[in-house]
Structure formats: structure tokens, C-alpha cells
Length: 382
Length: 215
Image 1 (cartoon, rainbow over the protein chains, first blue to last red):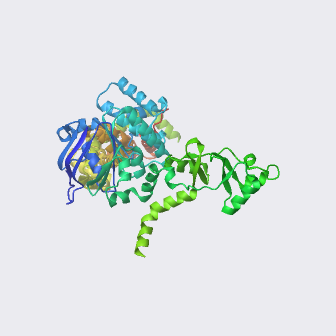
Image 2: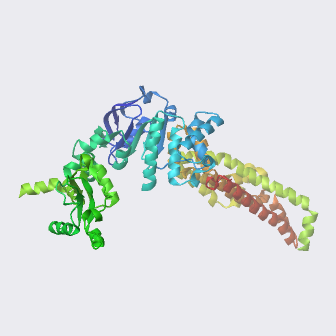
Image 3: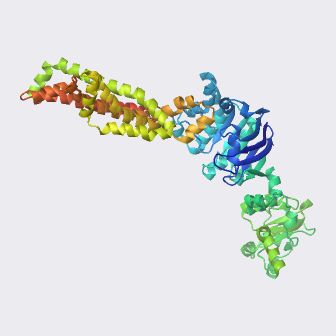
């Protein structure tokens, strides 16, 4: 679909090339995100595709044809383009803006209007908006129109230069989701430039990390998170993201405490208090004779019912939430944080209790990931 | 006051004729200036190096007193309307060139770059994006030029071009000519004000910022 062969760009008056001998091939329908620090050449690379910047050396092939051999105006009309500043024409209606490329291609008025209607329905905006002017829309709505404008002539390839960079985080989040879904529907090849790693991980099929005009690593978000090519990539991804990626593979089993404090359901409340006291905890998991998880009981429940009830199974709460030992830690962590619970019991087949994951265990894991190496180094130095 | 009304009622047709002549001279001057100035403004907006030279030249003309300039033009072109129109033409250059330049320069570069990247040719960029967005600013320049032009034409009577200035001069020469002076001065002022209002209205209408779905 899109191929870079030894592409080099040296800007006038600078010795160091902005993009140096870049080789890359992009498949049809792929969502490729170029990412890197500012000045790494990612935007230049993208702009060379539709010849907003002319390459100094090398070839760029779009569907097998060298872009330099095509008429630059025709080329640009055949490639969608979305920029960060949106750049809608303020003197044209939303509808006219959407079908801008259509009007350049001399489509009939009806065809332009049809296409605009078709597209605006894709982003769930009412059709009346077609007659409005851009300044009457919010930033998020404007960028939706910006994206539709790029889609209007149904180009197989769309270039996006930090399209969501200028939006507030909430709008950005919504638009990213919406756009990812839209991309699947319309099946386009997307070349997307950003400096936001979260955005890259969220959207990309393939991430291209660049630095100083060269590609440092190419791979799926998963590959890059799991096997960063070198220190630069690690630094660029950031420790916290490497950490977040770890729960993707870690299972509950690996970090759970296999000896939870329990009490059998037929014990008396008095005995339960004794167990709490001995173990210095304020809640207990309740199990039956063969170790099946029945529920839990805590000090407040005992306190409230001490006078009326005398056995654990009468006072316990059976609405216990649990996870299976082979569940991914990622999901567990998320649910725990969302429920605000301090721990979650771990079970295996037949509801047998095998362990517990506490917030403390999560904290330990976070600590190990962030400072684990350093602690090890310090220990070695001592 | 009574004499003024009498004068106007007796010479209504004459005043109207001079009014019309006055307006045409100003309008032609501005029209010809626009034909030259707008392209020049577009050129200097695109090729920045020329801009300071052109704008300086325009400013220099503005510093010359109108009467002096008209006298020099008269030496070259003789008496009559041509001299007046030429003077208006020269004095209109700066405001129109300047406003065209500012208007085109003022078009949001993200809009032009988006349009360019969507596959517009240079010419399409100019006619479909830059000019429509700059047109209200250009109109503001034409408006200034026209108001100034109306003032200049009033002096045109000294080179035998007629216009409302002729009535004013006749009044200054006559004994107790206040009524006659007013009969020339009031329409001149009125013309300037009306021209300003009408052009202002057009200018606002053309401004893309004021466009809404309901308009």
C-alpha cells in the first residue's frame, strides 16, 4: 500500500538530514502511528507522502506508484489529510467543508450533498449541521468535520497530523474511540502522527518510534511494550506504561497471598473475634468444611449483630465478590479499584478458596516495577 | 436658512447634477485604483520582499497635500475631470493596497495549509479561500478610499472639473454666499456619510465571521 525506500530529507541550510534513509512498508488497512520527540522527523516523513515536503532522496510508493511521478495536486486530492488545527474554511458551511475535495474534483452539487449527508451520519451529528458554519460548532465537532473532509473523496490513504492534540482530554478520548471504530468501518490505511504515547497505544495497529530522523523500533503496541528495543524506547514509553502493560500477562495466582485468614461458617461470633484478634485483621473470609468460599464477615457486622446472632453463618455477608486464580491481574486490578474494595478473594474450581489479593499486594507489585531494579542495585552495592 | 431653502429649491436640478458628477469622479478614481491595487496587494502579500517598497511609495503619496498634487497632475494632464480622477486614483492606492495586503496576510495559515493539502492549486487557493476571507478587509480599504476620494473631488473645482466643490467656491465668491456654500457643503458631507454607511454595511455582510446558518 505504502512503501518508503531509502527516503531522505535534508532541509536547506542544515547539514543533518531531518529524515535519514527511512525504509518502511505499510499494509492496506493498517493504522500506523508515527511517534517520537519533537524534531524527530515524524511530521516531515508524513508530509513527504503527499508532497507537502519534497524528499531529497529515495522513493515513496503509494500503491506501487512513486509519488514524485504524480501530479502533486492530483496526488493530494487522492489522499485524505487532517491537521491538528482543524483548518475548516470559515466562509463555507459545514456541508461545503466536508465536500471540499469533491468540489475540487468537479462533482455535481447533488453528489457533493449526498456524500456530505452520508458522512455526517457516520459521526452522529444531525443533518441540519450541514448548513451551519464552522464557528457555530464546538472544537470536538469541528474536528469530526475535519476528519469527514478527509474521508469525503473516499481516499484509500489518510494522513493525520496530531488531529486530536488540541482538544480537551475528555473530547479527545471520545473522538479517539469514535475514530478507531470509524476506521474499522471504512477500512482505510491511516498514517497518524502524535507525540502522545497513550494515544498511540490506544489507536495503533503498528507503532513506528522515531528519533533523530531514523526509525528506532516498529511493532504492534503489545510488542513495543513488552520488548522495547533499547533504552530510548523504554524512556519514551515511560516506566508507568511498562508497568501498566505488566498486568496484561500477570495472573492473579502469581501475586495472591495463598494463606488468607478464614473462619468456618459454623463457628460462633466470639470465636471469629478471637481469630481477628490473633491475626490483627478486621475482616475474615468465611468457608465451609471443604474450603468453599461462602462469604465474609467483618468487625462491624459482628458488632451490629452480636446480641441477636451467635454463629458466623447467620451474620456473614454472602454477597461476596471473587476472582478465579487464572484471571488476568489487569481485570482484577481494575475491578478492585473501581469497587473500592480493600481485597478480593481468589477461588479455583468449585468455589474453593485458594488465596487473597489485597491492595498491599498490588502496591508491592507497583513498587517492584518502579523501584525493583534500583533496590536490587542498592542491595548489590551494599 | 430661508435663503438656503430658496437656493436649493431654485437650483435643485443643478445641485443634483453636480452631486452626481462629484460622485462619479470619486467612484471612477477608486474603481481604477481598485483594479490596480487589489492585484498589487495580492502580489506583495505573496512575495513579502516587495511589500515595504510598495507600501512606502503609497505612504509618500499620502503625505503630499492634495492641492499641490492636483496642481502637478494638472501640469501634466491639463484641466478637467481626468486630472481629478487621476488624483483620487493615486490617493486611493495606499488604503486599498494596504488592506488587501493585510487581508490576505490575515487569513489563518492553518486554513490555507489545510486547503492546499486538500489539493487546491495556487489559483484555487486565492479565489476560493484567500479572497473570500479577505474581501471584507479589502472592502474596508475601498470604503476609506471612497470617503477620502469624495473629499478630494471637492477640491477638483480648482482644476475645472466641477462637482459640488464648484458650488462651494461660487458661494465664497458671492456676497452673503453662506446659503450657496451650504448647498455645496451639506451634500458633500452627506455623500461621504452615506458612502461610508453603505460600504460599511457591505463590508459587514461579506465578513465570514458574521455568517450563520440562519443568514
